[in-house]
Image (cartoon, rainbow, N blue to C red; front, side, top):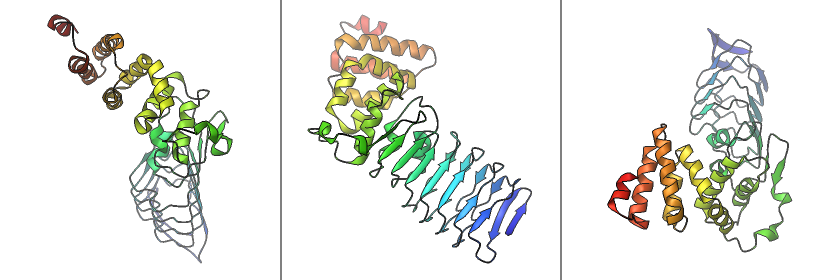
Length: 300
C-alpha cells in the first residue's frame, strides 16, 4: 500500500486501487496530521499498539470509515482528527489518560456505540449523538458532566456487566419530576441512583452535580439528608464551584453544620487542600448565618 513512513512516523497514505481496508504497519509510532485526509474509500483501519499519537486532521473527511479501535498506547488525538467521518458508528478507546483535543470527532453524527474506560474520556470526545456507552474501568467516581449533552443516550454499561437503560425504566416513577423530560436527564438520574457501581464518595458528588443541573426534588432530599458528607467530599476534591452553587441555592447550610464544615476545611487546607474553600465557607457564614462574636470569627 502507499505508505510514506520515516523514522516510525507515518507521514502520508496514498490509496492503491481504492483499497477500503488498511493495516498500519507495526513499528509506526505516530500518525502525522492529515496522513489519511480525504481517503474517501477507506472503510476500515487497524492501528497497531506501537502508535502513541494521532495528529490533527489525520483521518479528516474519510467519509466511509465505519469504526475505529484506538489502542491504549495512544495518548493523544489532535484537533479534527476524525472530522466529518460521517459513516463512523463505533469508537473504542482503551487509554484512560488520553488527551483528545477539541473537535477531534466533530461531524461524526452517526456515532452510536462508544467504548471508553470512564466518563471523563467519553466527555472529551464530545459525542452528543451517542446512544450506548460501555465503560471498561471500575468506577471510582462518576460525574454527570460526561452525559450532559447526550440527548440521545439510551444505555450505559458498567465494567461489572450491569447495564442501565431507558428500556428498563418505569416512566411512572418520574411523573411529577419536571426536569426529567428527555433521555439525557433520565440517564443522568440513573447514574445518580446506581448505588451498586458508584462508591459512596462518587455518589454524593454525582448527586450534587445533578441537583445543580436540574434542581430535582429527589436529589435535593438526598443531599439534605447527607449534606455534611457531601460537602466534605467536595472539600476533599477541591470542588469550590459546586459548594458555591449549593450554598447559593440556600437551605443546605445551617448553624448546626457550618462550623463543623469550616473546621474540616481548615484541616484540609493545612494538609495542602484548598484555602479558597476555607475562606469561602468562613465568609459565607459571616454574611448569611453570622458569628457569635468577632473573637469566634478570628478563631475560625
